[in-house]
Image (spheres, rainbow, N blue to C red):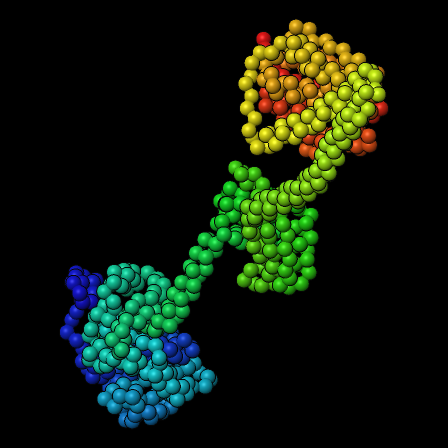
Length: 637
């Protein structure tokens, strides 16, 4: 071959090109040998006869004439066979395409062989060879037309059929080689076969030649790029088909070449399409899993690792339910049964898969029945992680519920505000009317009234004015607390002194009750003003909602680092359903609304003042028995 190939023994070298006419008119042309080999595949004995000599015969012919006097070696067998038919001068007289039936008698067996001969000048007038075919006795002789057809097929084949020698030179090529490559006759014959191969394929070509021709090893067909008549490189499937004997008694090798560019292009397009699909499958957020009829995993895309924290290959062959939440298995089985009810059946199901590091992930699964598809033979499951969406949906639901609750609270607050305004208007008007009425009586009847009567009217005026003052102070306190304008200064307070001062200041409010105080020598950390607001609300509330003559107890105890101040009355009590609401703004329990005045913000103000001092305010109550409020503050020491 060309292109720097060595000339050592056994290597392919470039000799002088053999003229096409010389080759075609040689003692035994490769074309004739190829036709003879094709006939051999049909069990037909064939030999080439020329000028009284037999330069070549196929194996079937040699086996049929293997008599004792002929079994010496291949050359002598051919020589003696040639001698046996040397008198057949009629063979040399055959014209192009003519055929003749003859009889050959072998002396050892006196067997008669029916012989058919056809001149090979039909396609090449310069060729004087005669192809002789024959069969065993009593068999029908080969139709010479069949031989002509085989030779015509060889010449008209679309595949390139060429014969190369041990140096890689072209010794014969059929007409298709010229049509396809644009190289006819002497331009191809004698050329090195590597000349026609793409430089990048030289190495694989030389390797195949070394194995198949030099060492005689089997060589699989290979695809090389070969330059064709359009001056383009075409992908060509090259097959080493067999060996033939050349005219110089050396061995030639039959090589067939078929243009497979379209097939290669289709394969490349299919491969490219497959790679695109694989890339899409690997990079989409969804995961594809194929389940077999037994619901085991037969294939899964790599993305499954995001769901279960395990590589895809570790899931193949495992049950589809291995990482599934037990509570979801029944629903998934129902979805699979729905899909399997008919070909291409579809269904959907939510499920949870266990991720080793992140716990349970919510998955939306879509199942398609492709069990009847021979390319799939399974259930195609598309899995989508919807954990975040479900979390967002849950958060939205929570927010919606929160909004509904807030709207409910706002509506309730609006309703209570309206009732508060009505109540405040009424509650302020009532003592104000009383003050005005008692004042008018005193003014008009002053001289007629005795001292005791005048003092009684004045006390009523003062009591109603004090009631109005209390309500106004509560409203002001509520307003300041709502606006965040209340500041406290925490300091140690002597509990006994603060409670005694407050009880004395509320003498008029408490005069109809027995007030019992037991505080020991306890001290608390609090703000004197804020503490007074809390205790005033608790004491006036106890007096307001308990009957005259009943007892109000004020007791203190230390529990750990806190001091608990209990204000206990024997009043009407608070219903259980109202107890959690009494600290809300503007709320008044039903019994309290019946015959007691109030703004509905006193207890709300009291609790908020308690909380400003790092304390708390809670209650225990029983209808008809009474209520106990517990005011808790940090102990001073």
